Image (cartoon, each protein chain N blue to C red):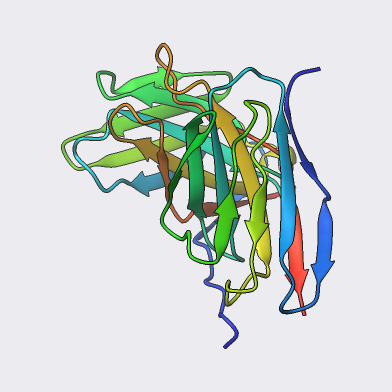
Length: 115
Length: 112
């Protein structure tokens, strides 16, 4: 059963704590992405990785960090430097534009609440 | 400070009617476009895509139209059903990197 999993679905943290969101895919995709979604808004790119051991900043990378040690995994750490971390976080993967499609496959999301 | 959420554009249609959701994209060099459907609290799901060398593509009950002259994309849903109620996003790709740029989204509400 192929797909992308994100865990947990809901996450609660106190202000000042770092928190790591999990993203795993078994689609054999090279590229993986992290987005942030706030109420009533579209998706904003945080970080992306086109290949193992390489990643680039997206549009809103400040206060976040990632690693890509394995093809299947792309964890996102929300650090205490992120001023407004409460949001819905979405992970996606794609086959890096092979063929005619740039379709990204999304996970179910993690809703992070920081108080 | 606390951020204020924006109100999404909303389209309200009667069950059985056709829906048209519009999207203006930003870059004339974009070569690929995609529509996603997002239900509340879930990740976006692929609906249909189109490359810039086409102006129309049809799927099951959905049609995407691309007008490159005015940089406009539309999604038509035939015989709209209550299960179509969701937020719909368009996205564009520029170049080979595979990054997608997402629009704000439109909320579709289907009245039974």
